[in-house]
Length: 457
Image (cartoon, rainbow, N blue to C red):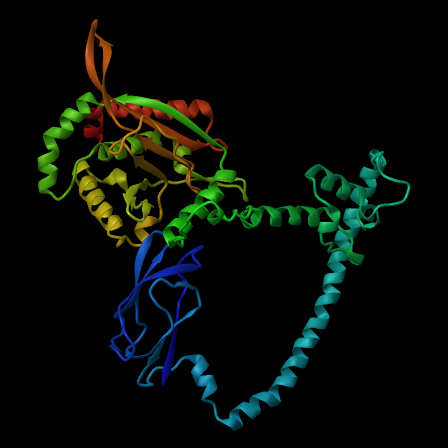
């Protein structure tokens, strides 16, 4: 028998993926859970296992294809031991199907009877809501009669003819909503206050899609010279989508600061070989991770997420930190879980392993999720500072830049000190400016007094 293999759900918000490598050919025999192909989804390359044993009858995809959830990938010839519900349905005897057909009219009649009850109940509810809405609107209209704009003509406009009370019209005007765009749910298509509010919520929820639709068409660049077009990878598409959604959503503020890491650097160099023997690379980022945990404990609003729909802040009692890794495919941010429970050596080893997996595109989706805040270290590349963007549901991100030796006045003398500039970007809806400064100063203090970090961890 034939088994249709389709692309299953890949995770929240993931609808497509790119086929990066086909590992089977037509006619190949495969075992259950043997890998059929690799696909790039979000920021990871994922292996796709066969749901059962069989022989590849048809391959409906090729390397480089973008596949969607639910799309047919392979046709697998199996021994027929396992049958899906759909196949069992197709194999039913004709007499069984005819019996089902006889039952269908009766079932439909029962459904219609049930449906007939619903409008009556709905009508009662709508009448109650309408009565309440009308009483509110009447009371408000007495206190504040509705005035038409002076620019209106004597004839009533289309907006005026729409069934809606003064309170509803006032709310629509304040929100800049045209009533003609709102679907009325009360009797006779009357538009209520709830209808206007629901319309606004729907508009907000679909804002990213509408923004995409408003992007201007590019000109034909080939008129001025030769061009080359290359399709975006799934990673680059995901990055573009996330940043496009984050930029208009998060009111961003960036606090710039610097830390004297002279003593920290001395200690780091002393322990590089020891950590290397354990399989890790001891970098400044490792110390920053521990310092960030201390700062998050002191300022819990940085370890939170904003639930705008419920009007709540979700404070997390765990400390998972993402670390940006520069790869050939783009920026990937694996997450180190429970940083507060791990030593410097353990963090160095885990960060080294995750970074390698990210560069090899072998990091799993689970290793990319669950972060509370991220650290991006561009010091190895260069630059004096940058403004990292916050990626919701995080409320902050930390950017590290290249350290440099500068003359500093200390103890009545000019001394050479290693200074590391860094920045903290945060969601201004959650974090006030004063707290942003306090957080960055606290972080700098932790790095400058690393002995305390050692005693704590």
